[in-house]
Figure (cartoon, rainbow, N blue to C red):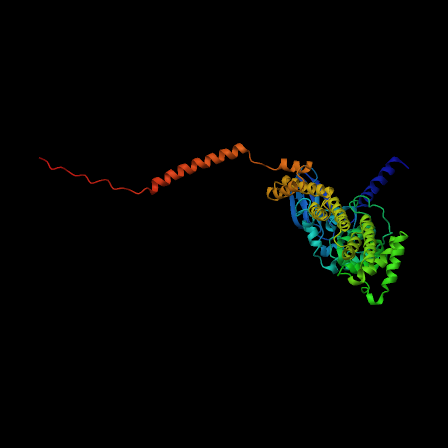
Amino acid sequence: MSRPLALLLLLLLLPAAAGAGAEPGSGLVVERLPEGFKITHAGTVPVIALRAGDRTLAQLAPGASLTVHAAEPPVVAARFPLDRWAEALGDVGPGWADVHLRTAGAFLDALDPGPDADPGRSRNLRLLATVDPQIAADWVGEGAVRLALAARAARHVPPGPLLDRLLAAALPTGDATPFEAPYDALEPLPDLVRLAIEGGGPAALPILLRHPVWAADRGFDEARLALAFEAAAPPAATDAAAVDLDATVEALRHALGAGDFGGALSPAITLALAPAEACSGDAARMACAALDVNAQRATAADQWLAAQASLRLAAPLCGDSRSFRLRSAELLRAQGDGAFAAADLVTASGWYRGALFLGGDAADRARLADTLADLALLRLARDDLEAARPLVAQAKEIDPLRPRVQAALNALPTVDPRARAAIVIIILFLLVFAVRRLRRIFRPSVAPPPTVRRPRR
């Protein structure tokens, strides 16, 4: 082939090659202009709460654009309206990754992210918490990325049709391969579903129990464990008259003697659900031990709902014992660590406070003091003295010698004692002059004595 012919074929193929990856819906396209950058919406669903550099926009319609005057390419952040997100999830290409992740709650709102370390007050998460359940159910669809985005959003959506569809569409033994960029902010799909279940709290249990595979994964293979919560609706509670309590106690004793704590759980639940007068003495102590071990195992496996259910059933059997309080503190500490890892220091401080109250452990005291100090430092970085001062005061009261607490104390603005003394002196001088002035104004006027003229001689 001659060189001119090869050059002609190359010129003809270049446009086709350039347009091969430019499909509709490729994202928020950033183009350089002489005066800055142009951001164009190249999709079919509008985006809202958009921030591009120093510019903000409530909504950008498909095909519309805006110009940002900047020397460097601006960071563009936005999200989809929740009532149109199901439609937008039809395109999860790289160009829309950041918008999808922000809509799902993996990133905070671009315009109203809330205070630092308090993600629950971000506007996008607050909207997820109030979304219509039927709208949320439509987010589940084909494809691992779409399922993962729906599962990430389900962490903030109250339990309902969305969670039910997710449990039907995914398996705990499914593909746990981490997502690659640009969706690497998402955990593997099974972990996302687990977090959605645990985040739903007791209200998620009726849905969970309809999916036995997921129920077993979350520690509820014994469905009666959910009877610890009023929101659950598994089989009816144990009727003491219909159960051979002697045989149950014997089965529990045999299981514990053999070290079969899994086998001890069922008879322990039976005794916990029986009337108080039917379970006392050795039976109550053995049932307490079995439920305590189950709570320990569930806490270690991040099965927080199962651990909480075990402790709720064990409470009447164990009483206010030191070991029961320590086990409860262990669960609260684990939940606090989970919130801390998610950069939710406000929630973490609440869990740590509960753990300290129940267990009184020095490690919990240190965790709580450090967390409050970190929160105070974040508030001080935003010049929010009103919020920082009580946090520093609480941290100082809990453990004043912690290095983070000392750092927060040193960062807190203080008044120079010399300046305070000077202000007091100035105020005293002003008071003295004010009193003298007032005395002059209000001093009663005395008429001068009449002058008596002597007659002339």
